[in-house]
Length: 186
Image (tube, rainbow, N blue to C red):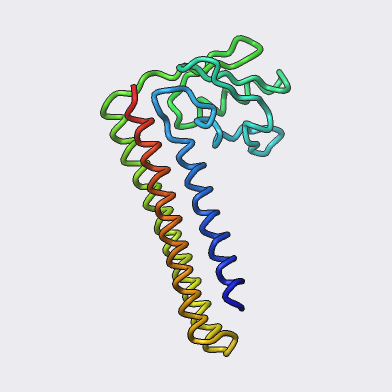
């Protein structure tokens, strides 16, 4: 495996770790209604759990309300059941066409818990990035051992992997800071 191939693999995997962090942070509740809060919700339809985005459009027309419009009105009860069974803590209001979820304001204690969860998620992403760095360094060592690259090329590849690691760790930190700020805002 060449240095460029190793770097490309490392960068793609680090990018995936950051994308996962973004998705996870999107599910963290802030004081405002956000369609991302119900993204992980799965609705039991025709015997299989289906992501809510495939069965309904989700929007937040007001800062404290999420509106779910099913594409098929017959799935309204199933969506309502899925919301009640979830750990979101929302009580769905069904008017026969749409489901409304009122998002209550967060208490200070709940906000602190959310911030600690944001930090946990950011740390998990950083650990994933560091594990990818370790794998990339191992691949570079193995390539040098197999005479696919010189010692200098291996060292240069490891330096570049370290630069990528710093870059992606910083991205994780910044994403977490932004989300923490959003959670703590009123």
